[in-house]
Length: 227
Length: 340
Image (cartoon, rainbow over all chains, first blue to last red; front, side):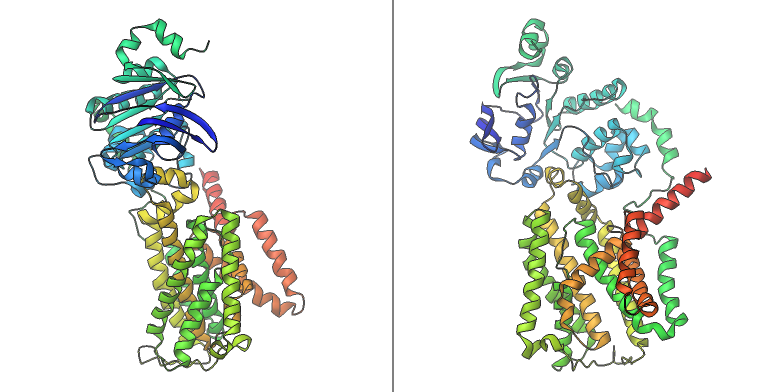
């Protein structure tokens, strides 16, 4: 992604963003509320208005492709919030979207044993944490090359956060797919990823290795803490 | 990771045999479904005097099922579904009136013609939002009605298309006035088509339609070509509506221009909502209740029967917001809960 300026309607949310990601890379996107973190992911998926810049992915020009083509090229987006389908069962969520690859429904159930226990339940019969797990599992069985996680821990109980963190960490370590995590919990996100990008008012204000930023609490506070 | 998965193995095993409601893989017929179809077969022997009405109920039920694919599953609101019913009816009727008397091939031709019409229309319908779709489908229905009215030298216009004569089905069964063959023919065709629809709806394609209905952005985000799927669903719904139209033309050996009318589009929508949309059997049950009520009320009160029919609709929909089947399912769930 080079020189990207994007937004909604006439409003510009992101300005002049450059991001490059290698296979198996992991990137944390941090910043205060409303600085354009989610918009960054939405722009990758083609859900915003792209004013300028190029989106290149494994040799393909994403900017011209509709959302579903981007997903087929390997972008797996897990949107913010509860985003399951109320009237489909857990099984059906996975079966309706699965594409061939290392991630099968069975592997997803091994990763999220709670979901396996609830495979016959519908989306609206799951707890918030289970819905989040299902949303991630659903993205995984499409077998993406790049997983986009939008605030995966938001509003969840500590025990569920713990479980999700271990899953995300294993995805990052496994290296089978690149991962971008948008998070409010800065330290958690830094501990999960190799590199970090901090946004402020739609621009990149910091970019570097996650460990380095984690080692400098003062800089971190200046960048993301609410003044 | 592997360690924690291992430790959690036992509860998963224990939970697995629990009944999986409406799950994908099991295509087995549930007892209630078997009872329903056994009932339609038993009706043939139990009500020999009602075969004509019975065949119309089955066919209208199939028409409502075709709308269910479009509305209940794909979530496309349509006020012009009769367009495809009419196309099927006219294709089957015109073939039979112009020398092609074999019924089964005419059925196939009607389905094909309605599918083509549906496919072309789908490009206009799928793009918009609910209100646009409502208006576009309504407009398509009106245009076809007027076209059939104008081409009265071919279609018979408002007088209808008569002279529909059919050869015996498979060279053996000749359509009779009592409707015995009509009922059996309608039942076999409706059951066969329904079985196909049932499979499609529980396939990943069918499930993805439900996903699109509930959130199309989300569905696109995981790689489903939303517009193409919706067009496919609309085309499928049109093809089946065409089969239903052809069945009406063949069993009544007549095509009235009302096959294309707005009233028919509206009525089938009401039947589907009455029975319960998105439930596959809703269309069949809705058509049954609606037409039996219509028939019964017209007998009891020949002048003001529409009043009572309207009254029935309002009451059912108010008390069972998800139609008769949805209401029944909720009651059954509540009864189960109480027993526990």
